[in-house]
Image (cartoon, rainbow, N blue to C red; front, side, top):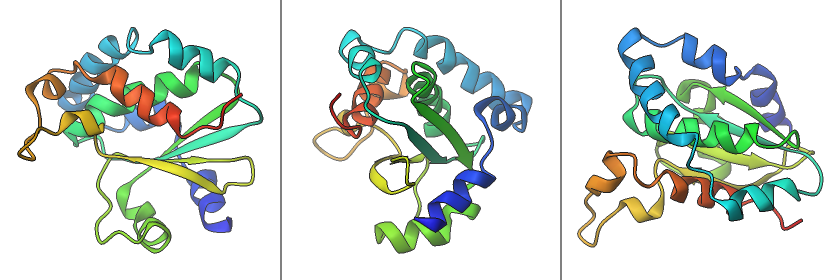
Length: 164
């Protein structure tokens, strides 16, 4: 998919993306980064170690976004756990036209992570927060806000990859 390849080619790496944020946003992200170090469960690590082929995770994100502060460090940890995955981060503005057209969404909620195969064909996506973060009445749970569901983010992102 040429559009996704162009976006991936224009994407920043994790460190470059984080360096572009304000001190306050970087501090918020670093807090969840520390929590994310231990957030990859054994089943996730095992699956990632057996991935067949190579992949990319293209993420539309912004440094001011609280959901990005929580989930981007985990997505980075997933990608960093194996040489089979490349991580690229773009702004929502850069992603908007392609993501809206391909995924049929009215709004690109962030973080919006797309797992791509080696031909930059989308395999699936993770949008905004893990499904477990939403309560029965549509409210965002306190456990999510406190960074207690990072393993759920890791599992949801990893579930998109094929079995090894």
